[in-house]
Structure formats: C-alpha cells, structure tokens
Length: 402
Image (cartoon, rainbow, N blue to C red; front, top):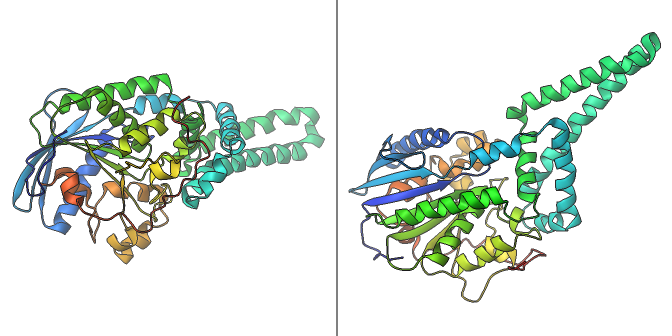
C-alpha cells in the first residue's frame, strides 16, 4: 500500500467498522456515531455532520467534517455478522447451561483460564460473571422447588412436584427475559461462540470474513487517501484475520491501509489450542510494512485486555515485529472526574467508550481518526507505545500451524 508524507492532507477516506459479538442492527452504530460525534465536535471545536449513505454495499453512512481548516469526506460501512451472532444465541435454557459446562471445561482443562489470569483480572472476571450468575439463577430455581415441595408435600404428596417444577421453570424464563439487564446469557453465548471449536474459525464465520476481505480489497481500488479498518472488542481479532488474508493475496499500490483495534479481547481466542490461524495472522500482520496498526485500550475497561500487546502475549512475536502500536485511551485522564464517576461501574458502557466523546480529549479521538485530515500513521507517527503495556509471552499454545 502506498504511504503518504507526514504533511499530506487527507481529503477522502473509507472506513470499515467490524463490531464485536453484537446481535443488534448496525443502525445502532450510526446513531452512536452521529450523537457522540456531534458532542465531541462541540467539545473539541471542529465540525462534523452525518448523512445517509449513497450507493449499494454494506449498511453505512457518510461523514463530512471540517478539522484544522481541511474538509474531509468519509464513508463509513459496518461489516455485519450480527446474523451469525443471533443464530449462536438461539439456544434454549438447558442448551445454555450445557454451553456453560462445555466452555468452562475448555478454558479450565487446557490451562487457558490460568494463563489469562496472568494478564488482566478484569476480562477474566467478566468471563466468570455469566457462569456465576447462571449458577445463581439455577440455585434460586432449585430453592423454589424445595420450598414449594416442602410446603405442599404434606398436603398433596408427590403431586407437589408439578407446581414446584412449573414455578421453577417460570422463574428461569423470567431471568432469561430480563437478560438485557443481567447480560448473563449474552456473555455466556459470546464466550461459548469463541471457545466451541477451541479457537478454530467456524466455516460460516470464515465465509463471512472472506466477504469482508473482498469488500475492503474493492475499496483499495477507489480514489481515496486512506482505507481504515476499525475492529472493536471481538471485531479486533476478526479484523486481524481479514487484513492478513488481504495482504497475503494483494500486491501493488493503492490508498494507505490502516487498522485500529479497540478494546480487544484477542487472548480469549488466541490462547486456545486450535487457534492456529489467528496466531499465524497475528504474526503475519505484526511484521507487515504495508499497513499501520494501532491498538487502543484502557485499564478502566474491565471487558478488554487493556494494554496487552496481542501479538507478544500470544507468544508469536518475531524479530521483524513492527505492530501493533499499543496506546492507552486513559479514561481516568480523558474523562472528567464527574464523568468518570458516572461511568466507572457501567462496565459495558465503558467498553464502548472508545466510540464515544471524551470531555477531556487527549491524543485518542475516534472522530479525528475516522473523519479528520490525517491518516492513522500520520496521527500517531513517532508516538512511543504505552510504557505500562504487557509484552511478555503468556500463552501456552503458540503454534501457527495445525
């Protein structure tokens, strides 16, 4: 991919956003970009406007922004895999508990859970949360059965089991209905989806990633200055595979290619025994001179492996390693004390803060990166990585071939 001088002003950009494990329609991301972009523009003193996308292709929107005296046109498209997510979540209550047992067994029996705990406690606690919550719900249902049988058993005998089991089933269904507040089933399906093949990529997801690769490759033929791929949460490791496949099959010049990974959870997958492809992709992408890869996270985000270099901790670094540049969004500094206090215990909201406005913005500004007049490489060129990053190899499984 072509490079640009540090002083070249970018005028046109294409952005491909890869969401994490999210069953929601991509219009959610458009509305988030519109409202948070407007808020950041007011804070930071630039202009940004979101309008409808023209033409065919993935769901997206158009952005016009004036920053630092330059007008930039950006087309943002969401690479959708929410249908795959929804299919993976279509499990009955008993099937979800079977997923719980299988997923726990995979992470514990392989030793991966212990290795992950050596990195950051936050995402491991987040992974254990649905296990504890679902077991607590099951215990509540069993206690209800015991209470009803104990209360009615002397009156109607064995027939007491019928209302007891019916009430317990009703309680379990109620827990399922309010999961939009508890997130126990949602998170359990998320971790089970990553772990069910012990890190290998499922055929239906592999096919979808191939479609993503084709779309990005087509964009590299457009008359734009930068093609920027953004991967958030689980979308970060999907972005790694998509871009590694793209670079393996493509030669020649074109727009600047950039990759921004946000709030990544790469070790949850790359540490698994059969994640050979992901480890190979991490290794390949980390040595490429044909893109810029910046990884942004924050210790305040308990759902991400904050400041953990995903290549290094997976144990696949080579001497030629160039990427990623690991940086901190520093929530405690870029959010005012009042704003931080309001958000610090809203773990899932904080996991999306990378896509939102900061009332004390620092170097990281999502809307300058995606709609401003500098490429990712220009914006962070010469920037030193975070001093508190973790780079020691922790994974037990490091093979890049089956």
